Image (cartoon, rainbow, N blue to C red; front, side):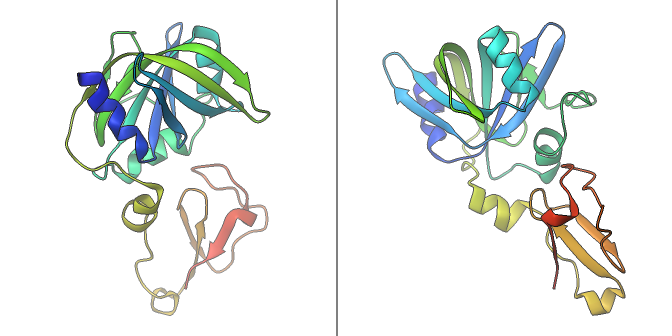
Length: 206
């Protein structure tokens, strides 16, 4: 069954959660999706309450999960992980998406499977909501291995290009999203342009 093959990929660890409310689609990266039962196919997802996608899922009761593969590019993480959907349209100019049977856009590039889901229940966990959902559709799109957080850190997140002394300037990297700041000193009030985290979340690069 297609759904069961798609659900197998859930055991690995990095996903794009998408939802739609009215005319707006939005998405965010999450790392907490788990299979609960096979008959019926049910999953749980934990979503940060501060995220716009959370609000959409809570309101509409539907979402789609795209399972990231090792073929994913860093720009997917920039688009869906490091900017707020309240400020931008994350799908603007993005050709790598299709609408599922639930009408929600899901990512098709850099993923190996997707699942469309309908919420059965929502549990308040403080900073997050845990959604239990039934899988209504799903398919495997690629046989590429699923991406783990360790794989992202080792192979997808940008790396230093050269020692600081050879560049003539110092560099700091955002520990949250991997953005690299270059200059003589990192300003104390600096804000990462990608994930909006402060200078305290940057570390010097050797």
